[in-house]
Structures are given as structure tokens and as C-alpha cells.
Amino acid sequence: MAGGSSDRPGVRVALVGLGCRVSRADLDALAASLPPGLSLAGQGERAALVVVGTCTVTADADSASRQAVRRAAREHPGARIVAAGCYAERCPAALRALPGVAAVVGARSQGGLPEVLSRLAGGAPEAEAGATGPVWDLGAGARIRDARPVVKVQDGCDRRCGYCPVPLARGPSRSMPFEAALERIGALRARHPEVVLAGVRLGAYGRELSPARSLAELVRRAAEGEGGRIRLSSLEPGELPLELLDDRRVRRTLCPHLHLPLQSGSRRVLGAMGRHGDPGELARAVRAAAARLPGACLGTDVLVGFPGEEEEDHRETVAMVAALPFAYLHVFPFSPRPGTPAAALAGAVPAAVVRRRAAELRALSAERWRGFLAAQVGRTLEVVVERVVGGEARGTSAEFAPVRWACTGERRGELARVRVVACDLAGCAGARR
Image (tube, rainbow, N blue to C red; front, side, top):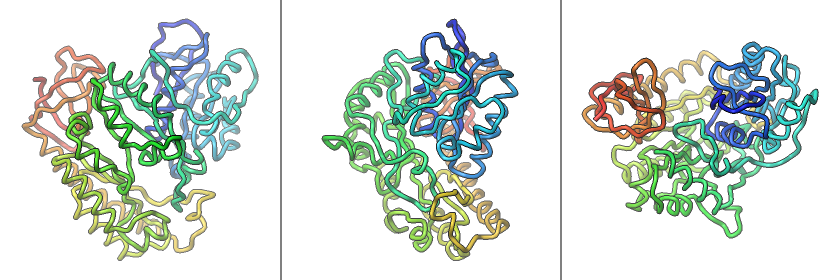
């Protein structure tokens, strides 16, 4: 997605993002720290430099990353392409071989992207970035590309779930300094109706800081100030700070939406995955969250077809997610990632079986999502306006419901009160109050 405006002179830079909110935050940080002489390309404008933020969580993500680089070369003929992010960290040679690629900057070195772009803009044939560590701050007065800006407060992960390549790409857990995080969240809340806090393992925020901090402390302090609402991105169920949900002041600020990945409902499969917690513990954490946030939108991740997964394991997973108050499921077929323990495991599940199991879970997700959206009919939701196209405004409610309505002069980034009158699987339809 190219972002920004072309109202500044200089070499045009296009940004293309794939993957999670953490990757998106990395590109936002780059957009805010472009060197002098460089400016963001506008929508549809040809760019001389293109940065593609890649993803490697699955084989499909690897393929999509390569396709995005090839597409950038077609859409920006002659442009010099910088492949960045997680896939760039893990498979740099595959990206260097693609047409137009002048630099590959892995996730652990993205702090060096501004220097790489500056050198390429100055005519260097290629450029490299040193090991500069995570990108944190967007900078004072930064131009924000998203109507619901993301603040990456944590990066990396110390756990080694057997299927996950992200720790290999992003390294150990590291946290944005506490006061800097508070300042950045406060500045964005003052200018935007919603701020999203994100991390590779968000619940681990602050543990390695000195003095040690916690996500609960960060959110509680951030909620003291006035401004937009705060949304938490994905959290391990056992790392959700329930004390936050018992704090009335925090609940007034926090979006009633939590994403709590389970991956499996089988104790045996969770153990083989190297996941922490058993199904009973995970279920109790989800129910505890639901009890504290009545009517909230709860989502989860489910990994299907892990090596050795038997039909009984699948049935346990279906039973578990069916018994919990989830509004939606993200269903991922297992994809062996080179370098992870699971890539070498025997007991591959046949592709047809994986497709059948995934389809069953996706059908359950569609049923739950339909029910969740139907429950919004008749309610008035507070919606961040994210797009205005063809006389229709679209955005996301605090509850994570997609909402659309006839535009009455709304502008992107505003907060609108919309009464929901109907819904379908695409979201809610309503009218401005």
C-alpha cells in the first residue's frame, strides 16, 4: 500500500506492506523518518524507490512477499527496490535474485533503512544496513498514514513455539522504553480517535527493562490522559492482564476487542507445538476476559494440520472453540518453516485432510461472525472513518465491527456515531447519528 502525500519535493518513495501490525508499524516509522530529499509517493504516483515490508509466517507469506517485489518492479519501472522485514531477514538471497532489488534489509536491521534509502537516492548501486536493532519511535509531528495508527511497543520473542519462524527473524524480546512509549501513545491519542498497541509478544512488554515494567502498567498510565481509545493487538491468553479489565477508568478507554490465540484445543498437540498452558488454562483465561467485558469481540488463532494431529485432536479443537465465546477465528493450515523444530517432524497430515479440517473451523468462524454482527443491529457504534469512496464511508467500531454508511461529509480519521440497521458477513450497515 503506497501511502502519504506528494506535496513535498524530492525523490519519491513508495511503501508496500505485508503481514502483521508490527510490520505495518515498522513502515510507519520509516515514513516518519525519511531523510532530507526523499518524500512519500502519492497514490498511483511513480516512485524512484520502493520499500517492500515482507512477511515469512507461512510459505504463502513468502510467496506473497516475492510477488509484491515483482509487482513493485512492474508498477514502478526503473525503481530501485528495497526488500525489508521478516522474509528479508530469513531468506535474503531469494529476494536479492528478484528484478529491481537494490538492497535487502532484514527485520533486525530496519533502523538502518533511512540510511540505505539515502545512499540509493544518491546513486549508490546497492546498499546494506548494519545491525541497528528495532525501530520504535515515529518522531514528534510524524505524518501518520493510518486512521488507526499502530504503536509497536514490543518486538521479538523469547519463546520457541515449534512452528513459528518469527523469533528467528526478529530475535529476542525487546521493549520500547517506558517513558518513550507513554509519550508516543499520548501524542497519538491527542491527534487520533484510536491507537493500537502492538508487539510480536505484546504481553511480554517491559520485562527486560530496568526497572522492569509491564503491559498493565503501560496501559493504565496511558489511559490516565485524555484522547482517543486504545486497542490491544494479539495477546497470549495467559499474558492478558486481567487487572486492567477490572479498572473502570481503563475499561472506558480500552476497546472491547481482544485477540487471544489458542492454536489448538488438544493438550497433546499443544505440547508438541511447544506452547505454554494446557487447554483448560487457556479456556479459563478466555472466559475470565469475556466475563469482564460483556459483549466484547473476542477472536483467536487456530493452527490446523500440525504434524501428528489426529482426528481426535481436531475434534478437541473444534469442541473447545465452539464452547468459548469467540466472535471469529483466524484459521491457518500448518506450513513447515525452515529452521523451526516442526519442519523436521514426521507425521505430516494429508493436504486433503488439512483442507477439510480448516473448512470446518472456517464455517464455525463464519457462523460466529454472523451472530456477532447481528448483535450490533440497533446499536449506535463509535466508528473511526477509514475510507470515503463513492459516497460511502467505511470504518471500524470499537468492537472491531466493520461499518459502512452513506457519507454525510465525513473525513478520514474522524470518529462517527453510526446506528446499525442491518448486517451481512462483510460487516454492518447503518446511518450517521
